[in-house]
Length: 500
Length: 100
Image 1 (spheres, each protein chain N blue to C red):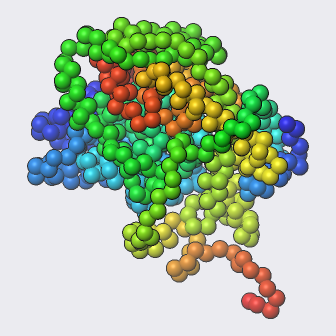
Image 2: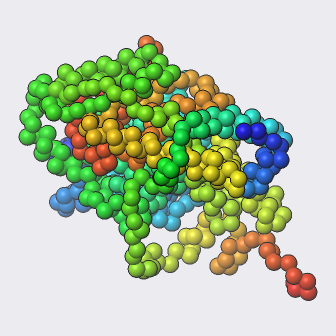
Image 3: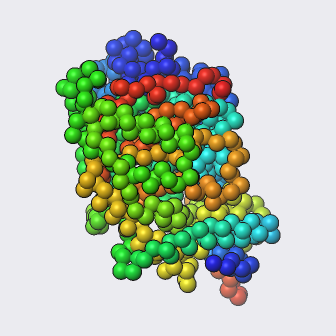
């Protein structure tokens, strides 16, 4: 099998067995990016030289007998809103086109400790604000399944990179669906971890009470192996939760205990709730039937699947956008053209530095969200919008808590449609926001969720579903997802080169 | 929610954004659409409901204030749009008579 067809863990295994060197693996992907990368535009920065010297350094550690992680020596792509020491980190904004972080994000430190080889920084919607990777200052990213369609977003570059086999796995960030939705659009698996389980130190803040870094890959095992590297308490993030990291080796040994045979009813005892009101709101027939089929598969594998109603779902999108934009307006006030970032040449006094630098440095959607956020926080409107949204957030979390007294997990669609044409929604912000209906509640409630491929639409575009779990129940989600993928092959399908 | 031209100007000020006439017209339309949709929240009775600012009821954790990041002056200044010596350079911010 060709290297780039393999999963990240398969590559790691080959490296461990000395059948492949770290450098060979890196070269394979760097060549791929050079020769085939242009069509999808997944990367903002390719770290060619750094990756090769990193690969050699890891090889030496492996040769010295150091026991690193199962992903040691395996290349990885990182979303460009995660700070990398000495390598430009832009958040896909003109504002940060020259920004070179003087430090690594905690997740980057942990990747390096585990022996990962970072090959590049991936494209995103500017400051992770969007669902299509069309708002990047560095050009749109295209969906490897159909180059005329969006890859989803905001982690669209990470998704396109993995789907086009330009990286075996990737890190993304998820504030309102930004890992799960591009995974669904590109036929990948992704984990949005419980809020607080992965350090946000070094992640450029969009909405701090919602942002969470997670993993994206070809299957759940790759995502879980990567999660075990990046998760766990970090004193540098005051919202980091005092918990042990996700334990991948325990997951592997549990799998081995259950036996290799996957046809037996492994999910016996697992209770899955399917919110049937999710299927009544503007969802396309093809997504609906693929997700329903996914639920049926879980039932056949031994789980108990039951329909129920989750209240207040139609209020999640407005509450989310009020809260996310409010936090964004505050977080992005740091970009003032003084200490780092873009400064306008047209400014003639200090105040003009602020106004001109921000007006010239931010793109349209970022400005829209800053303005919306400034408005909902402003005196006279605070109670009617921001306070109200925080109250609704509490109600939404409560309705999930209530559901989890009856179910171990909730199965739902990720997005109401498959990937749509480039330019199709970008002029209608409200329509874009409404497409986040299935994903934002998870962030509002701080819950973990896994996105999984579950079928294809009539035009051949992938459909994803998500499993939402109780806080810190990643292990349960990953195990269930692994059984599903052992018994299905949607996740093994990959796009025909150059789109359809 | 009626979005007036004055309100757009005010929001621009709060956001420290200078908007062209075209941007103002666009912002007016977008904010009107989005806020009208957000008014949907008023359908829900939230009287007495707790405001949720954070996913979990964690209390603040304190630690000793130890400097662990070392001296990064050079790396920091390298990212600055304008420097003078070891300082970030900006326009004069204080005006006072008789002072140069």
